[in-house]
Image (tube, rainbow, N blue to C red; front, side, top):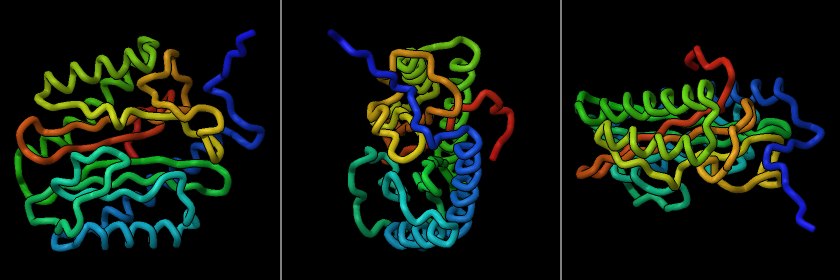
Length: 227
C-alpha cells in the first residue's frame, strides 16, 4: 500500500502570523547587513558582520548558513564554498542570502546590490528582481506548478540574456525544520504552491562575464509592496 506524503504539511506550532512576522524581521536584517557593506571589505568579514547583525536581532540560529557573495563568487552554487579573500570593488556586485530562525519559525531572504555604474551589473540587479516578479505573477494568476514556473523562468532568463541557475530554485519554509515536511526544491514540486509556505528563488549568471545576481522571497497572495 502506497502512502502519499503532504509536502505542504505544517506542524502544530506553525502559523501564518508568525511566518509573516519572521519574514519582516528577516528583511529588516538583510537591509541592515547591506547597509554595512562597503567597497574595500573582504567577503569573509562581511559574513562575520552579518552573523553579528543577526545575533543582535535575536536570530543567532539559522536553518542555513549566512551567505554573502562578492563579485566572481556570485555565480557559485548554494553549497559551494566561496573563493577566499575576494575584496568588494568600487565597481562591483554582491548578494546576501540569509535563512535565520526566530523562535521556532524560519525566515529566508536574498537580494543583489551594486556599487558603481557598471551597466551590466545594474541590469543583472534589475533583471533578477523583474524575473522573480514575473514568475511570482504567473504563480498567482495562472496556478502553475513548480516545474512549470521554473521552465518559464529558464526561458525568460535566456530572453533577457542570462543563464538561470537551477541549483537555487526555491523550497519550503515553516516552523524549524521545514525538511521534516519536504526537503526538495520548488522546481521539483509538482503542485500549485500555496501562499506563505514556499520561497521563490531566482539566480542568474552572465553568459560570458564572471558574475551573477540573486533574489528570493516568500510567495504571498498580496505581494504588491516592496520590503
